[in-house]
Structure formats: C-alpha cells, structure tokens
Image 1 (cartoon, rainbow, N blue to C red):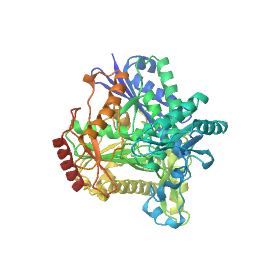
Image 2: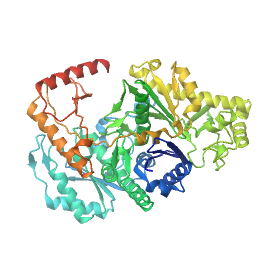
Image 3: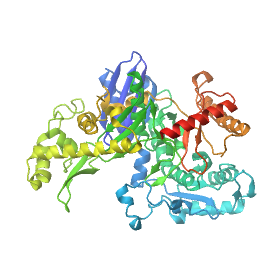
Image 4: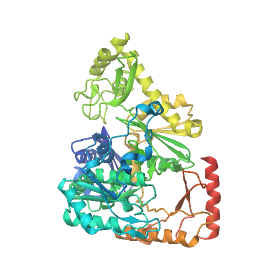
Length: 590
C-alpha cells in the first residue's frame, strides 16, 4: 500500500494527514516541538501511522509516495529576530534604501497605531548599518553597463564582511533586474572566499522594479535562509533514514509546493506558508461541494486567520507587508490576529476590563488545563469550563484535560477580581474571543466591499469548530461547514496542493504593447520554467503553463494581475485586446 503524507507544523500542534491508494484517510496530531520542529513532525506521523494499523512512522514513511510539509520557521525567525548575521551589498549611494523604507512609517500598522505618526519610529532593520557595504558600479534601465564593477574594490568589500563574521549576505544592485552580471560577479567572489556564507541575489529573489521592496525581499531571504536550509536539510536526513524514497515537497506562501533545494534558495517564499495550506484545502473542498464563495477561517492554538475565496479564486497579494516591511513575493492573502485556543485572558490594570490576547501560552507551557505548567487562563480553559471541550477526550483521548485547574485559574485571575463566578467569567472570555474573530472577518470582507452573508464559512483548526457558530452568527453568515478533517485542515490542504513554480520579471510596456518584447519576455520565463521542471523530473505531459500580466492605468500606482489564456502559444494583438478588456472588468470590481 502506498500513501500520500502531509505534515503541517503550527504554533501549538503539529498535524498529519495520510491518504492511502483506496482513499482512506488517517489523522495524526502531536504537540509542536519548538526546540526541534522535526521531532513534532515525526511524532504526528507516528500517531497517524498507528491510526491505520502500521507499526510505526518508519513503515508509513517507507511506503509514502509523496511527503508534503509546511512549517513556521520563516515567520518565527523574523518575529523572534533569531536569523543569521546578515550583511547587504548595494550600489554606491543606495546603501540606505533599506533603512529609509521610502518613508513608509505607518505601513503594516493598525489604524489606531498609525494615527500617532509623530510618535512612530521605523522598525529595527534586519541588517544593521555597519553591515551594509557599497560598491561602485552602474547599470541603466536598459541593462547597459555605464560603470563596470571594480573587481579589486569588490574583493575588499567581501573581505571586510567576512572579517565581521557574517553568516549570510544579500546583494542588491541598481537595475540588476535588467542585467545581473555584477550581482553574479559579487556572488562568485563570496563563494570563492567563504563558501559557507549564504548568498541571495536580488535578481533571483525579487526580479522586479521597486528598489526598497526588492532590497527588503533580498534581506529577508538572506536573514531566514540559513535557518530554513538547516531545518529542511535535517528533516530530509531524518526522513531518508526512515526510508523515504522521494524528495519532501515544501509548502510555499503562494499556494504550491516545491522541492527542498528550490525552497532553500527562495526561503522568503515559506513566510506564512502554513496558513496558505489551509486556504488551498478550502478551495479544493469548495470545488467538491460546489461552493465558490468561501470564508476560510482557521482558529488554532495561537492565532485566528481568515482568507477569502471569491468565485472559486483565492485572493492573493503581490506586495505583502511583513513586520512593517513591504516585500516582492506572491502569497495567498491571509489576515491574522492573536486569538487562538492558547490566547491569554487578562484584566487591564488601567481600565479594569477583561481582555483576551493577543499574547498566548503557546505549546509550552500552554493553557492551564494542559497541565504543562501554564498559569494564566486561556480561551481553551474557558471552552473547557463551559463544556465545549471534553476533558476525557482531547487529542483523540491521548491527553486528559484538568478542568479543576482551569476553574481555579479563571476564578483567581478573572472571576474574583471582576466579582462574578467562574462560568460567567468563562462566558465573557468566550464572547470576547468571538468578537475579535468576527471583527477580523468584517475587515476581510465588508472593508473590501464584500458582503459576508453571500459567503459560506469554513471553520477549521483545532479550536475553529468550537467558536464558528458564534462568530458566523455575528456576521449574518447563513451556512457554516466544518470539514471532517477540521483539526488538521492545513495538512489536508498540503496533500491537495500542486507543485507550482512561479517566474516573473519587470518590463514596463504601454498598450498597445510591443508584441515582440512581450513574447520575448514570456519566452525567457518559459525557458527557465521548462529547465527547472525537467530537472525536477516532470515531463511535458505533466505540466500546465499559465501566464499573467500586472496591469494598471497610467499614472496610477497599484496593479491588478490579469491572466492570459492558458498555454505557450505566441501572443497576438487579439490576446492583448482580450486581456485589456479583462483588466477593465477587474478594475470595476476591485
């Protein structure tokens, strides 16, 4: 018997879904292990293996046809600032582009935070100024070399950074999107003098116009790349030792999967890739039951996330803001807040009001009822006190919850200070958490011009089904669907994902477009795609090519992504007219 295995690491739990050749599904779940996430991944696979009668995880992994995986290493590394010691090399005169951020002080902030702009500071850079070097060189927008790279100066820059013991470097030179020969020359010097340094070229990580965003993307990739690479290489070793025959496939934030080598090279694509898996699973499930408008809501142990699927198409973003930095990386649009089962309930000392989140208890120590050392009452503790959780059947009966400890924590820290009993206090925690989640869904729908009542709501994640009926009712949503694999829906989305490679480049054209340039651009990208897909073992019959353009009206700033007809045929004037009409339609809806 052969199996398809999907393992999704969350902030609190690690989930596993296994499907055999006959379509039989088995689920596995374990606590996440932040010290070494691979341990939790194997634990979840072991649980799923035993649920289908196998001896252990090794027997499952040996028989796996595909092994899909999603992790939170990228975003965790950024949030905790635990990445590599990273340097940046820029064109002379442009070293401060990453620090100036085009003056974008308020991006990524809530309206209440952005209102006090005079008191705001820019976020702390991921590359300190002493680790930013400049080189004299210049390429123009056509790709012509105006000032060649000085090899002697370049070597001196590399040697200075190596002397500072940098672990990773991003190279972002002006107009390298048109000609990357100088970036490649610098990379060669780094690799010759210090092969252990992780090198990112902006022309590969973000081959698009936008100096600050391109630099930020390059820095992010360099900052998290070594940690992502170390984790995935270790995971591959562990899986190979247990008999995995193929290459693990890693979830990307845009909704597809890639092999480990491609993922390590483009580590920035893994940021928020875990939530993307759940959205892909929701799109797949929606297609099976003829639901085209879906609100995908995921409440786990740490966060609550929402995404929108409209007319069967997942909403995406192409210049996402991550930790107040704008980057050039395609991803599924996911909005999240700190409202999970582990979100801590507390009383504001200034107002005396009950608050829930955003701080959470995580996997360890976790909610009080877990008995792992947690002392602060959480949403899960309230759910248990209210009877929504079965204290004798948690994690499939493998974990018993301590209801008395949850009652005591809520009594001492919430109920008594507020002059109410434990059940009333638990009810307050429950209602506040639901209000936070319904507010986020309003932001994702009403504030974007969508009526939430015209959507069906999918509720998944370990805690989602417990709360979905309440936050859906607050929005007037008439239909709530809880997948049978709700508690491991992200892993379900993993195994329904396709291998997807994305390629792009910047070349500004005006309509009516120059067909020769347009076809030449797509031909270049197609050549890269065919080379990579064949090296990954895919034949022409396995591949579907899609093409798109980012379009906007002249003098406007924001683009809309407009698809071309599927295929690789040469683009004609009729195709351009069709895509222009489609842009007009999308613009009216946006």
